[in-house]
Length: 300
Length: 217
Image 1: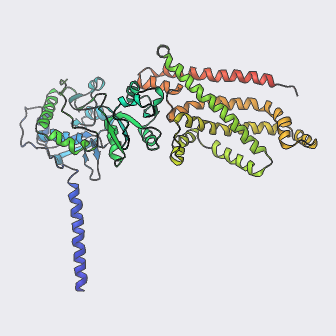
Image 2: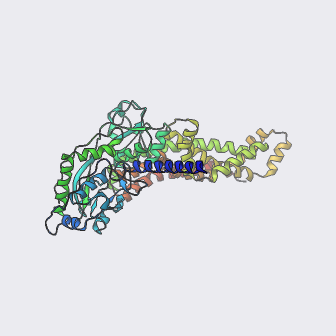
Image 3: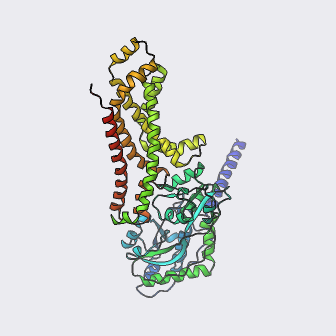
């Protein structure tokens, strides 16, 4: 009887240890190693968006839930990634702690609507700045410049960048039919037959696995997602050879908020948070270098 | 039509690429289809069943699935590393052959049984019977439906562009409309004209062949 209760106690203790172990692992995903500084009772001019948010003590931010390295929702329901870290820092500058942020999924096709409807105060979601979008919303930033890159199998040592494609006509590259990346890569090819096109990137990856193509090309952010899911089977090579500046979407015409966000980004860069956030998220994948904070655009 | 005329070289090179697919696939599917039809009308039960099984499997599978099987399944299973042009063309041959087989078989069956019986009574072997008596008669009946199958195949060749083959007539449209930002309607019209040139030419050839073979019965 006595031994049994001892065993039971030991069992319980082990269980508790295991549970504690799980809890410990979790701490990496939510707020994490790079905790943003949360300003205490910051002061803002009356009537500004910052003052409203600081007063409310909470805010809603739109981000991607399915973009590894930038905004990916884990099992604990809180997304994590570079976009999320950047958003947390900006919120922190208004006195909002990470746990007071409500995250809303912002798929590419819905981002303008979310801002226009006032469902979110801010969108940080691999959001490329362009003039068409500028007609509906205002962009702060850019905080990152994405660009086209090349993905190859880890054991491929022939291709180290787009320049190597012309010299190696047997290395076939794949992209999506009619996409801008497919158009951009053409000038690097020895012949048009060196480009294979499919409707979706997953087919390109299947062809890569089968050895039917040797490289896949598109924006580095999409490729990073494949590298992340491959357990070391793929790697990114070479420099980015196009430019896609990512901005932070806010309500159209809110110049004060835009300028505030730009200042917050600059502080994040100066304090080293920006670099740490990158290293802890998108920077984990091979072939991605720590970016410098780009010069902000004018707030319009 | 101005965007098409400005990028005519894109459509012209796409036309040749598609024509290449079509010519290989037509030759391949006619050869394989006639062989399969011979299987199905042969007196050997094993061959009959083989032919029937082929037709039942392929004819009831959507073309895109057949093509994706050849584009991804075959390379993954057998380690084949052909390019997508070859794989796509083989897929189109395999698919079209089932239909060619059935139209040829229908032609053979259309020949009165008495013809084959008479030939056999005269002491002709199966091979002689088929090549000297039955097939020459069957061919006349076979030409129009087989021609339709080939014209359908020309149009189906657009789908081959979806499995990695780039630079064909259909991907010329997608490149124009998506990447180069031209209006969709003229872009697809250019592709349609390219296919019309191929199908109308095939139709004209077909008419000549039919007229040559026409025999009053």
